[in-house]
Image 1 (cartoon, helix red, strand yellow):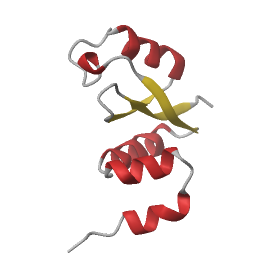
Image 2 (cartoon, one colour):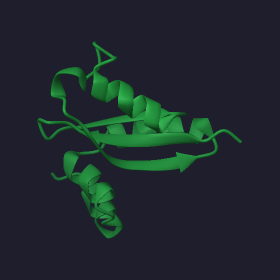
Image 3 (tube, helix red, strand yellow):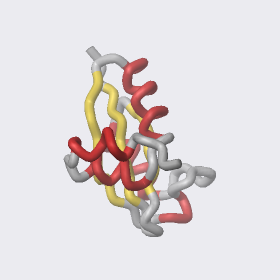
Length: 95
């Protein structure tokens, strides 16, 4: 089975970029080297890979990437820092 990865990159401006790939090392190198000139990360280098998880089903990886992209910065940081207990409360909307 081919592995897929969902990853989060921390940019130099303290923002996060979330992506999906089948070759994590190569994809991060391309982000870091500025290969993707139109990408969010291009003008925000240097970059740091702060999180990744592996999947054997690319469709599940894509769905997870889409879900994480919608998360707040605080929720992404809880995931990055392994603070899984905080995730449910960070998912609640504040009225």
